[in-house]
Length: 112
Length: 113
Image 1 (cartoon, rainbow over the protein chains, first blue to last red):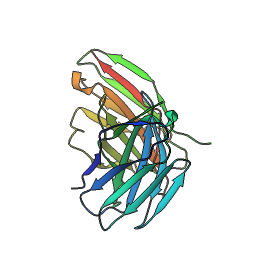
Image 2 (cartoon, each protein chain N blue to C red):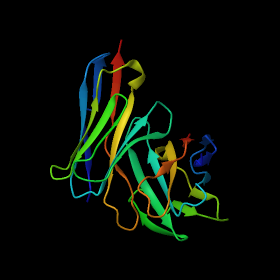
Image 3 (cartoon, chains in turn orange, green):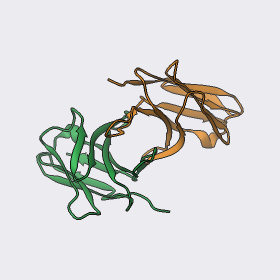
């Protein structure tokens, strides 16, 4: 059974600093996703990673995937307050349903 | 840009009552999903639906839950007799054939009193 774990669960960081959120999954997965969620809101898709070594960047966020280590990272560069949100990774192993298995989420608080 | 819509945005009900949560997926999508998020927790898969039948369901999706696509556009989640622990945000999602990314609706916040 596919399980997804994230760490840290909570991250308080200062503006301008860099940090990385880690996402580990337990069995082979063919797709890895990162989402952002603001309080009381829906899930905003950030990145879809489809293959080993995939790296995607958007603004101050960069996501990567290592399928051999079953690890994805979300790197934050020079954080700004607007990045404060909860970030979820999710994995799927395809098959008939493509259901998403989500990690526990990382609550990011960027302090001025 | 096409989007998934959900109604109502917030539903308050008494324990033991039936509720129906409604979703309109993106029109050319073929796979439909319901997920649940209890306040402060992670998002959990409930059920997937394809070709007018359930393709997979989780342990959470017990006999109190049902899904339907009554008219080719709406996709509904029914909870027959709500419990306090059903209070959560419910998200609908849809996926196109041969695509990689599910699109999520804005969610319905269900509060059971």
